[in-house]
Length: 250
Image (cartoon, rainbow, N blue to C red; front, side, top):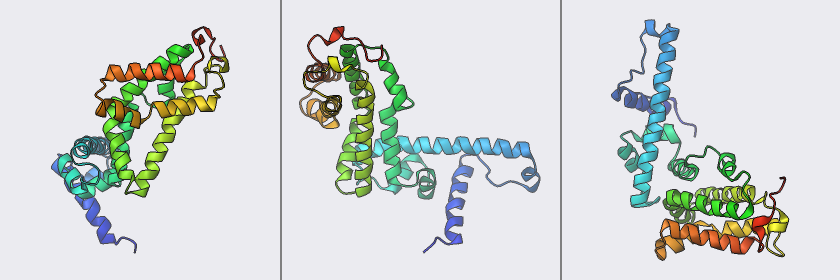
């Protein structure tokens, strides 16, 4: 059954109360409503508050998910931790699942604005340096995203929608590896290794499960994990003497 008018009125009244409590008068007088400058100023303030609300919910999600897991974190707990109402949480993010996705995307992106931006750091690098830089990138991302990886892995076992998100994130990770390895010349690859197999090899070696095994279970530090990744990727993907191979397209 479609939501009633009163249900929508209650949701938006709740958001209005939240904004008023933070110093923003959402209701306008008749005179103010006719003032374009006032409307523009009000819109800017409202947009800033909405961005702030989304950010505070992300920060709360990072703490609550880490402490209680995905299943153990209720929307009531998340809203309380962020200092907003439950209806405001839904208006800002839509669902707890979307909050988890937002948290994970923030952890994965770091300072990169897109996969293309992340791949640009490899421009012009010969094969060995390219794989060394890939190991560095994997170590950087793993430090930020390890908790999110565990949350997704555990939650995907009981939630089909999160399982679909987790699968998509894994394919996006493979897509980044494809961008990095696509410019390694075929002559630099290990004997008998196709480019697709090289991408699959890197995707498997540099996986969340590998980080979990080496760092969380065996006690590797960040540098130890990075160095292991560099050695293993190089040995598995590159032919001996690949350092002297010109880059593809050079």
